[in-house]
Length: 247
Image (cartoon, rainbow, N blue to C red; front, side):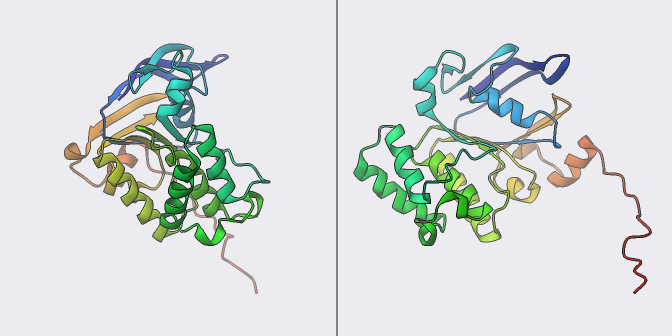
């Protein structure tokens, strides 16, 4: 469902993504992991057509990302890093606008909006303007926008960031259910415990290159343990002055 071949992106002399190749099958949930600056967001931006690769190619749902145009856009749902919200629209207005963009009939948009608002615990905030929403509400609004047109492929950048534990569990279960029905999910996340429970495929990127790829069946140790072995354990330095108050 997602196929990348020799995907590369350079910014001047800096190579942000270096020759990535991978295949993600239909109905998989792929967790794409790595430290900040490793190349995750750049990769997602190329997979969704927001950023042209320097070289290499990508197909999503059988369509080339570079030539798929509007047909491709209708087949993907994207939760971007910047969320893409409008400050002067309410939560519900964002869903109405998204339904119009994707050509949904108004009654379908209203029905799906009501369900998404309920499931994502946004009903109480449906009339709140985006610039007055909490970080969690903004994240869930953007996720609802990615889901409302029922795309066969989802690209989600940090869907669990700023999300409370109850909503995090709800989102995990929701994504697991849509994957069981054939939707392919490609997500980035630093919340290793959440993605270990739900992902069927794992990839780790380091300095623009994939350093590990495995399926859930091949995971023989806790994900956090394997992740730090690949990325490296953070240095620990004791700040002797911190906590040593003279009061």
